[in-house]
Picture 1 (tube, one colour):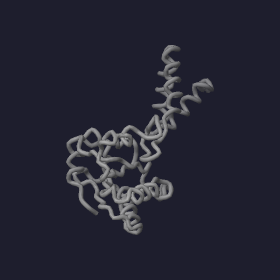
Picture 2 (spheres, rainbow, N blue to C red):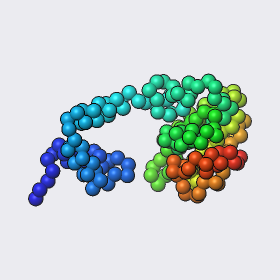
Picture 3 (tube, rainbow, N blue to C red):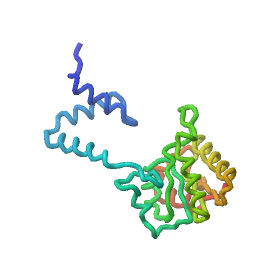
Picture 4 (tube, helix red, strand yellow):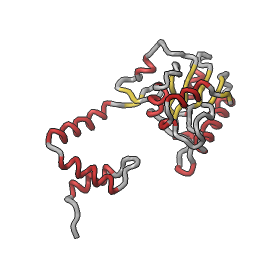
Length: 202
């Protein structure tokens, strides 16, 4: 029975671990890379090595090359608004709307007990500390998470936690202009921008 050489099979196995990549797709990608010339492969390898220099912003947990990301370093943004999102990809999505001028806090996931993702696994404690330590500078939390079961649970948890901590901050959520069960990363700029403008307090 034919099997791929060990080094190629190892590459296929690593590629198949990427989100949304199944075994057949991983096989096609690996074969594609193998057929490229040495210069392409060297450049690809160098690009992967460069990723080691990227880490998470120590304030908002966005991706950054420095201690603080470019948004946190921007002193011209609105300090009174903090947009709470699931992942770093959502920053680009919201920024494209041009409707939000505040800062971000990335949870790095949503509460999902079925997948063993609990509140302590997320950046919720850091969010609470950030709001409280702002001494009233942060006046509104915009929970820009998906309208899914996980998003609803996470929003309710954060809202309850904030009230228990005595944080005097308005908590709002994106309007239902986004379809229920949708992912904000795939929403068009007009729909997402309108949802930001029509957010409701919870």
